[in-house]
Each structure stands twice: as C-alpha cells, then as structure tokens.
Length: 114
Length: 115
Image 1: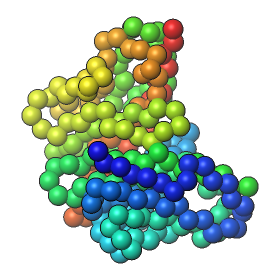
Image 2 (image 1 turned 135 degrees about the vertical axis):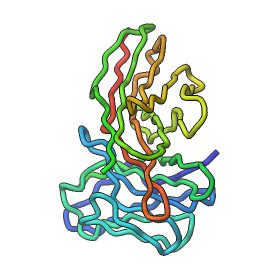
Image 3 (image 1 turned 90 degrees about the horizontal axis):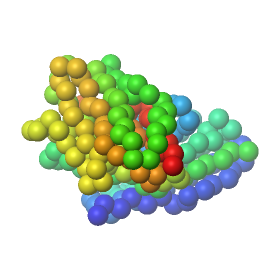
C-alpha cells in the first residue's frame, strides 16, 4: 500500500512565525501536491511538484513556498503565518507514468494560527 | 477552464435507504474520473475511478458510479447505505498540467446517514 505521512496531525502557531509542514511518501511517486481544505471551499491546490527541485504554482500559492530536495519528501513553508492560513493541509502523491492518475493522500495537518 | 460540479452540498438519508451523489464535469476531451471519500478527521481515500472501458465502475464497499459521456456526469450510487458511510465525498477529474496531470475537484458532498 502507498503510504503518505505528514509530520503533524495538529499544529498551533503564532502570527508571524515561519511554519514547516513536511510530507513523505514511500512509493517512489514522481508527483507530489499540497492542498488546503476549508469548509465550503473544497480542496484548493497550493503547489505541486513533478520532480525533485521542480515546483509549479497551484491555484492559491500566495503566502506559501515549497521545497523538494528529495523525491520522497515535499515540504510546505509558510514564511510568515497569518490567521487566514488556519486550515487543514493535505499532502498527496501520484505516479507520473502509466495511467495511474489517482492521488494518494496523507492524514492531513490541522494548522491553527493565533 | 475545466470544472467539476457536485450538485448537492449535503445529503441526509436514513440507514438502509438508497443514495445518489451527483457529479457533473466540463471537458471536451477524454477524461479520467474519480470519487474520493473522507471520513471525519482523516485524509482522502480513493473510492473508485473511471479510466476507460465499462462505464459502470464499482467499489469494494457497495458503491458504484456510472460514466455518462453525453450528460458529462459521473454520479455515485449505493442501493443501501450504512451509518459507517457517513463522510464527505469528492468527485474529481484528471486534466493535463503541462506535461503532467492534476486533479480538478468538486466542492464535496456531505453524506449524513441517520438511524
């Protein structure tokens, strides 16, 4: 089974802090994704990466950055956390080749910024 | 731009009743379609997918979805729901993103199964 793990299930940070959310997958997937999930807004794509050191902006990249130094790890960075970044953050991965387009998700990190 | 519309944000239903969660998409090219389920305080899990072939696809826990190209729909159905089916359900379509692919998501349907 594909396993996607996220470093924390719950996180509380103060406004202005730099926040790192880590995601690791163990199935050698090329693609990795970061989403945020808010009530009534569904899943919104923040950034995705299709290879090491490669990144692409999603629909709502403002206020976020990412890092992918190794294939299995994809980090989301909030340079200066703000209260409007309080949300559930979901990481996902998928294969690039073949027709396995489905994404596999981690359990999520619920971030509260106070 | 391609989009996915889930027509009901909330669906309340009694246990053992049938249910249909509706999903429509906009696309002029071949599509790959997915339903995901999210149980409370968990990440998303793939429920079923349509890539090609038979237009009726089934999951291991009794859900099925039918791809209807003419109506651009991929509705999810179950003939008899259980309390444990209470969850958020998301419909998604796979689209090109440069040389790769990403998923376009519906806003989700909250299924509440009552005893």
